[in-house]
Image 1: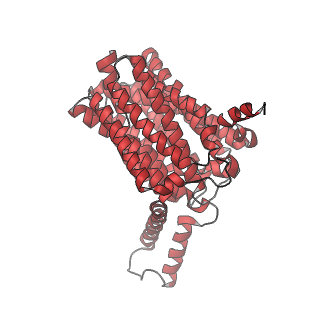
Image 2 (image 1 turned 135 degrees about the vertical axis):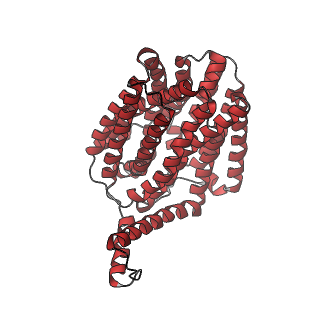
Image 3 (image 1 turned 135 degrees about the horizontal axis):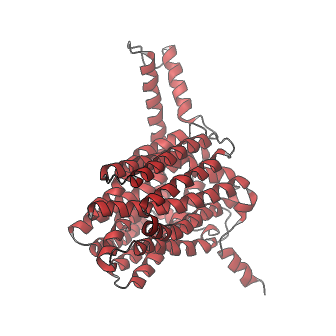
Length: 452
């Protein structure tokens, strides 16, 4: 048929329908694009400032560590909070805190404090605020869009992130060269106000189908009052109430972790992501490679991050191949293998154009892998548990790269950044293949009702 090639081409392109069917989703997506752009500028600023203060790849890698610790602790707690409270209110409050911390980074830069501890402390606080609100934010797509557009909504968020990542680092490098790191931090603080506005305009979003941790707390408190729970010990009532609250939150977190471990698709998908990030994440290597090979120009440092985003953006444009596919598991496995292989090539690349090419391929593979993983998590988890499972996803998706950056910095300090990048990429490929062999359910995962 004459029109069939055109229809196939359209099916392979990004699906924009979520932007048409939901005003709230459209506003949320646009604000995410703005805040993502400024956040990527801030990433370059933090990398550049820590490298300027220390000239040590280990300290640059430590940025990942100070982000990962609050990310793990508060990210998991955020899942219980998202399944117990109104999710919109959680996002509003945590976004406001992120804006305050970003303003603090701008102030310390403007005053030229020069304190590594202060910079790392503010970065850790901002990471913690983001982690606490992230599980609630991840539930918005499922609540704002019909099921058949869910994967397309995830892909739109991914392409928005990649577009910001493509332009943000390069713009950040230029801004540092022209106006200093404080300007990047100030723009990041302003962008959080845009995100705060978009979240505030969302409708109330209490979790569906379960009372969550708050309900567990109420039941425990009632049992205690009636003598059916803990026996009176003479402890003040506020102390008993706090004990019940902590116990309820821990029980809620345990439910989410048990579900993740019990389901092979979730367990395998998260294991693939861990293999890719813990073993091969390269961002901590960028300042040192830039210094050794390209003279330490901040513009080149921005180009490294932008190259990853260029590949991700191209993959996002062709995301219909993923969002309309029934075989998301195979897609994630294959993309993770390509990611590892490309980063191994980056470790060996000499000319700038070749290094940027490998990073672009890695970026395309990363977007494909993350889109397929996020869609599988949404489809394989009921709403009443989605906050807690999303918290596990967030911890792995964010803390994994941070810990991977720490690993990369340590290996680069012991040997060289080339060894760190190459060995990490090879180990990633080996680990992903192992996960695929031990989790056949992941490879067989099929989207019900989706045409192959």
